Amino acid sequence: MAHGYWQVRDQPVNIVIFASGNGSNAEVLVRWAIANPARVKVAGLLTDNPQAGVIQRAGRLQIPVRIVEKPSKSIAIQNPRAWHESAILDAISGWRPDWIFLAGYMRILSVDFLRRFQDPVTHRYRVVNIHPSILPDFPGMDAYRRTFESGVSEGGVTVHLVDEGVDTGPVLAQERFPRLSDDDLASFVTRGQSVEHRLYTDVLARIVENGGVFP
Ligand code: GAR
Image (cartoon, rainbow, N blue to C red; front, side, top):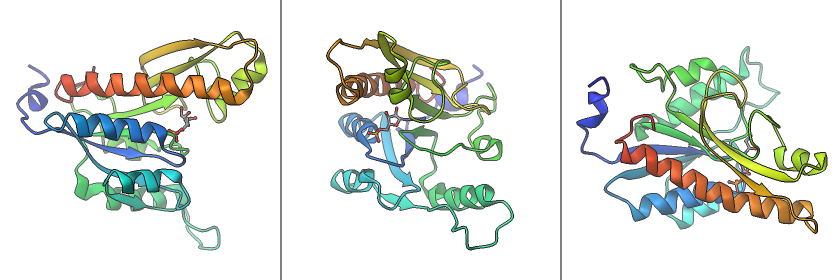
């Protein structure tokens, strides 16, 4: 009914991944898409960081990459974020993304940007994020380290829709994992990241099984 626009599609759901760093989540999403070509296609990867490890990963997986750096401070631009986002939209428009998956993308997207991906029926944005804590605990940067240093007995991972706030959108999936007595930060993060990889591919699967409709 209301979602008929999606349900009649017989093309794979087209996703674009945004990442700023190592790219382990990007890689598992790409690998899942490669294994399910009738249902989903990773049209490309966008990064703001020319040094990001994800660029090599995408190259190995034969995924097109666009690098769009934020404008240098030496250039006089009134609204650097709007400038950057406009350049990003230009760079990815040919990929015609149905969904954006943020996989360690370390920038906040403006409402103007999000509106480009607004569902006409639900008014939600077709933009998903993975965050390394049980939100609403530990929003923002460096959540594994802050969780670990707080001394709690569990860490966690959240996959959520992106809204206008920072790490505040509707939760699609959450999972806790234990902090073991002999953990250091590195072993804690490694355990968390294996949860991330499973949770993010589960959410991708849910979205594409719905033909691109909100899960
Ligand atoms: C992941 O742990 C992800 O949850 C986190 O960045 C890491 C990227 O790792 N994202 C955030 O903190 C977003 N606020 P990856 O590059 O190996 O996928």
